[in-house]
Image 1 (cartoon, rainbow, N blue to C red):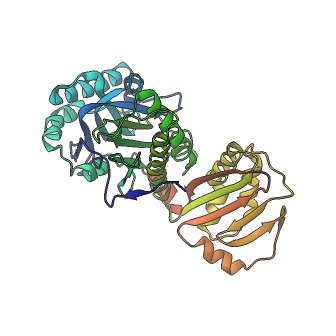
Image 2 (image 1 turned 90 degrees about the vertical axis):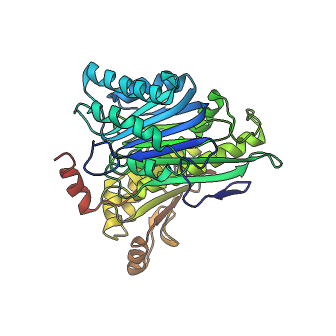
Image 3 (image 1 turned 120 degrees about the horizontal axis):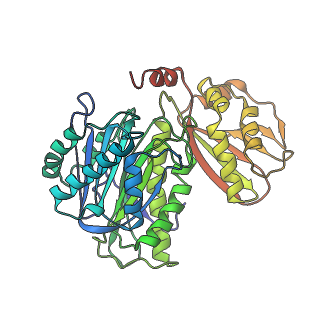
Length: 407
């Protein structure tokens, strides 16, 4: 819940914020689907990012991390269909060339271009197809190109993912907009997974403060989703702020900065939920709410464990009100709680109380589990800590999709 008003923009995405353009096109990396996206700010912006924790990192991640740490970006070039990972020195050179060609076409410094790739690991990037397509991408840049960009970064995603909102950081100040796109469907797990999110804002935020805001937002959104427990090699969440709105630069600890953090978190949560709902083979979104925990960290640990549990996910798919799997996952999560005091709810139906099972209507419980989303609430009655996490059910289609991903 926010303490100020913001407005969601229907169909808004990466170009909703002022001064940003984008496009998505077919470059030939995939079969007859858009596979190259370009995002461009008309002026250089400050930047912040969070990257995969996997020890194996794709070449684009390795070259983009220091560029984001430098705190200045103006363009983002992203391909799908090939991860450019585990390709040795040649992969690094391909990623660098991808950035060089983009910088030259846009006439901007090379170090202000972020490079990202997603797709199959261990296959050399068909660089010639990308370099041939970059000039076409530059010519296609427009404020209407956000959806095309969202489609171009998809892999096994079934729908594009975008979100945007606007608000006033200061009551009498100009309107500020935050928009973003994301991709992800499988290999999704807390602490970065096979997912990417690119966010733009026309707020004015210095890079260190923007990094602080993004870390807060990611910890409550992308780090609170799981599809299958796998963390991949190319994940990143990056935000660029170009100050186009004319709003005053945000000051640390100010009310305006607090509103910006809330708005950025809201955009990240909406994108994260969309990724979880689009989990490979998923039929329903699973939302787990933990409350009454000794601390927020305890609540986060428990929520993440429950949405990551394969046994919980299969029970949801089968409409089986097996609440024991829920509390079992909370129990091994590392969260502190009293096992004699918890309550468990499926939707508004209480199925456990004071650490024990209750008599409940199994048919009603089954109907609740057939809804989308499925909401599970666990109350520890041991403090004020709260957290939410999002996942999905495990269906037969998850195995089918991943058995044929490469072939």
